[in-house]
Image (tube, rainbow, N blue to C red; front, side, top):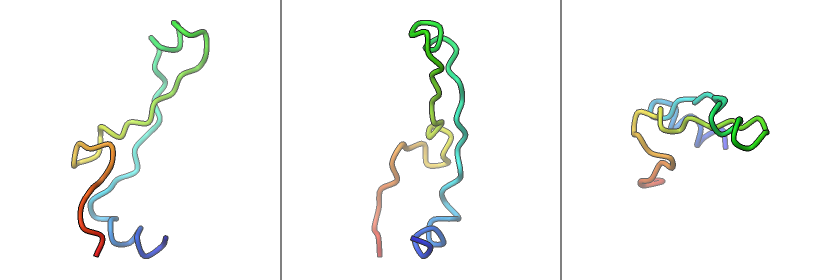
Length: 51
């Protein structure tokens, strides 16, 4: 896992959790979303060669 972390560290950034007020109000629960759309590659899941 550490090796993989080092390999993608220049591409992937930690993304924040953000409370979604509209969904929280509609559901009556605290709804948080992970802002993967803030990745520089604009992808929810990185894809590509692993070697």
